[in-house]
Amino acid sequence: MEFGGSLVVWDTYDAGVIRTWRMPPAKSDQESLCLLAFSPDGTNRIACSSADLQAGVVAIWSIERDECVVQFHGPGRTPRACAIAWSPDGTLFASAYDDHGNTVRIWDTSTFQQLYSASTRFVEDLDIVPLSVAFWNGYLCLSSSHPTYGFRVWDFRDSGNTGSWSSYGTTIAAENATYSPSDSVPFQFAHDIDTCNGRVLVGMYSRGFMICGLGEGKKPRHFSGKRLGSVVRARFSPAPGSDHVLVVTKGSPLIRILSCTTDKLICTCRGPVESGEVSDAAFSGDGQFVASSSAKDASIRIWRARDGALLNTLQGRCPCSTVKFSPGAHPTLAAGTNNWTVCIWPSREWGPEPEAPTASVVP
Image 1: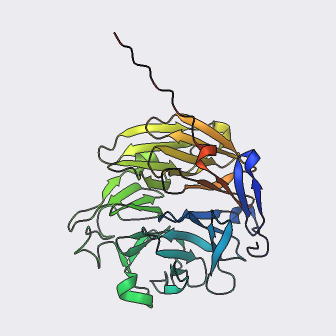
Image 2: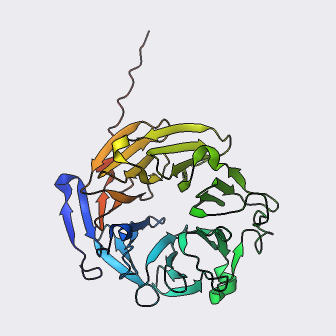
Image 3: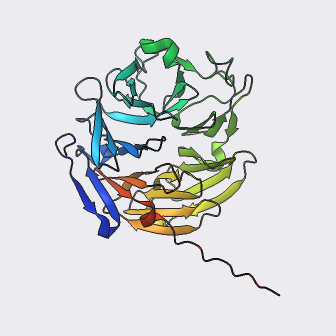
């Protein structure tokens, strides 16, 4: 089946990869990033897009049926898809583009129709390129590297296509924590966003990360970047009741798992120095495992989240730029590679060997 005229699908089960989907080739290595996002509703769908400037297409694939369900096209002739996200119930899908208007679109995933569209040029003549998008409590959050407008919120159901982006706390203060860029630690250079159980995690390129909770008058909790460095990836653990946060910093081969309650380091996942910096990392749906990709080698590493132990190493065909787990008890692992392919491993292929039961001694 074709995707942008150049998709190839084949079965490589004997080599451990059960499916590989080829994306349109990019013009340069800097444009080869592959965006991946599993649907959270258990339908085993995955959204993917290359960052090819000539594509701008986000494809929704069914892993079970091994077919492309739909392709969402961006605005204009040559936009670049630079961020994608599913709503928590899987009924909505957002895609952000690096086009002239820096457009963000929201789609209905049952009818595949566009519901809302807005430009992130909420300040006249200001070019704000989206870096990450995430649904949060009925709103759409956006991060960008702009020093003043790094984190914005769109109440798309009320404002519709007007593109009324608000600073955190400006229009939603009655329902959420109040905060504005005039406070002591503004949301500057926001690079990554994650949401879980009504909270927003904002990774900032020069200021560590912040966690925003629900409740009027509550300010975000700031975790300083002096100890962490420039945060390029930040993720909540999805485990019930967990307060753990995964953090990846620029240029580092380390993955840190922290308690966002005590600010204590839980463990460190340390890859080989020769593998280069961590390009992406993700929790499994139960929070027990972490998958990571590296910038210089073709390895996907599986770590135990509670102590940082390396459990498994998967060998791909080229360096990977992104990794994602599907939700559920037996999650599928997906990796987007730097030669514009998406590789899929079932849980039986990436999962660690079960621990041997401990024999009890009867006196």
